[in-house]
Length: 108
Image (cartoon, rainbow, N blue to C red; front, top):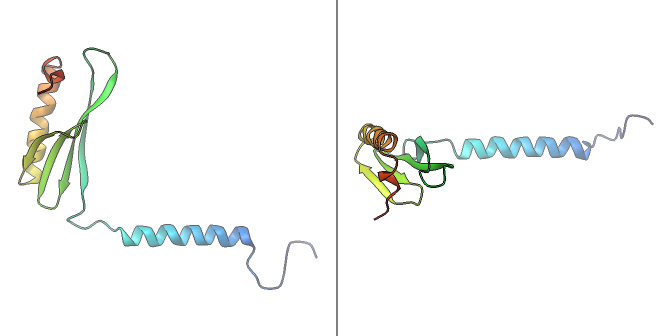
């Protein structure tokens, strides 16, 4: 018989694809983002003044009703009680990094 088995059993390759797709669908439905799920709302890259390499400088993460802006090393640059406040603060941090890149290279 050409064309594979006709005994009603799904070929393994088709089963793996179906299984994989259903796992993805199950995963997506289980992690449907709620209002309290963390969301990255901004990334800020800059050119390091010393090395000249492009690097991640900061990112903003919204969790529920509050948000934080983090430096790449995990240091909190700003904590805000609202996502709107964090977006404004991220804008200020972005402007400072663009205007004074050497100063933002200092560590405390």
